[in-house]
Every structure is written in structure tokens, then in C-alpha cells.
Image (cartoon, rainbow, N blue to C red):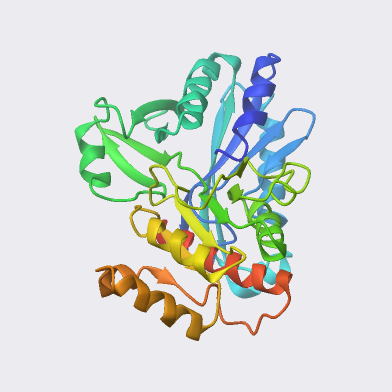
Length: 337
């Protein structure tokens, strides 16, 4: 939902009706998993996607009916074998259930509150109460992970987990599709040289938020990193991080071994979900041995991805960046499970 939330709020603020399509169930090799959403406007403008192809076309056709029908919702089930998927212009099989619901401006307050909570770093839970006994679906704000008003049944599902993936739950005799609105991840790139520049570009393209840090203003500036959320010019590399969480990814690509070692020592004191350091295996062992002499244990060292990135034979800065972002996407996908 976070990918289309701004567009959705913008349309509703104009007094327009929209149809929201949500994949509420998926099995097999479906084109998009549960939680994928698309917004369909009355003028056929789209935001987001639920997989494209014939599946999306059928949903658009049904949405046209919902704009004129008294019934504000429809549930569409799709079952695609590999053969039928190929025949319909799709590369995946599997099955999906899509809920289409017409939204009116009266839901605006709920969506704005969810967006506000999300932007403040909280994890709001967006609930879609599924249709039951003729009652139409509705969107509800179920609370955030920092509030106490999350229903007990939901707390038991998310307690102690870095929850990301949507799930179905039963609350008060209603079936609810629950979507945690979580950060796509923040990549903290320490160093602002050629590899950092390529990594920042690809990280932004992959949907991560990007923070770049360096002590050289000629490298660390907004003109060089226009897509970064923040560019920090450091006085030194002695204090790079505040409080981090599993949604934070640290990429250490400074211009020297000594800086890398100092930043790595700081990174290990955080709760970051990913810590990666550029360099050869020889460089890695020199730095690891230095940290061992300062009582860093093997369990801590196991958190580090070094040499950084997936082993794809990367050589150029852009190839190295590609290997790094591929590894970050791989780690992020694990957190969704």
C-alpha cells in the first residue's frame, strides 16, 4: 500500500472515487504475492500493479462496473497453470484472489492517519475487513507497533517478530487482511566514492531509502546524490550511527582500511539488519583480527557480509554495486517471511 498511498490520498482529496485492488490470497508461482495493490481511477489512470497481463486487465474491466454499480466491491479468483499463464501473456502460474473495492472520500481520514504514522517511523497496521454476509469490505487502522491498542489476537501474531508480510486474521468474527506498513529499508552508505555513488543509485531504484556519509564535502553533497534521503558530511568517522533497527542496512565503502575498521566496529554495536564491508578476504581477516583483539566475538563477526555483495564476478563500480544491492534485496526478502 505504501507505494500507492500518496496517489490514493491525492485522488480522494479531489473528491474522486477510486477502485482499490488487493491481492488477498496467493499460492504457487503467482505474478504478485499477497499485499500487492493497484489503484484504478475512473479515467482509467493506474497506480501500482498486481501483476499485469490478463489478470490486471480483468480487474480494470471489473473496476469500470464498480464505478456505476450500487455494489461497491467484487472478489475475483484467478487460477493459472504455466500453460494458461503463458497464453495470457504472463510468465507465472499459481492462483490469486483479488479484492476490488470502491473507495470514497470518507475513508480519507483513516488513510491520512496511517500515512502520518508511517512517516513518523511507526509501523501502522492497515486492516481490510473482508466482505461477509453481504457486508462490504472496509479499511481500518488497527494501530501501530508502538501503541497499546493493537488487538490481542494481532499482538500474538507479531510479538517478537520483525513482521513485514501481510497476513489473514480473524477478529471479532470478522476476517481481516492485515498489512504491516513497514519501511522498505534504509541503506546507510559510509563513504561517497565511485562504488558508493553507483550503490546509492541502484538502492534508490530498488526502493530503499538512502543515507550517504563521508567527510569530504566535494563527494558528499546533494548535487552528487540527488535521490538520497540525507547526505551527511562527517567531521570524522568516529560516530556514524544513531539508533538503528532491522530495517537499517549498513554498507561500508570508505576510502581506506582504517576508516572501514572503525566504522565496522561501530556498526557491530547497532541492531542493523545488514552489515557489509567492501574488500578482499585478506583485508577482511586483518580487520577481523584487529577487532578480536578488542574482544569482538565470533558471533558478532558472523553478522558481517564481507567481501560485500553476492559473488557474481563483479569488477567495475556499477557491477560491485549491483552485487551489493542484490544481496540487500535478498536479505530484505528474508525479513518478509
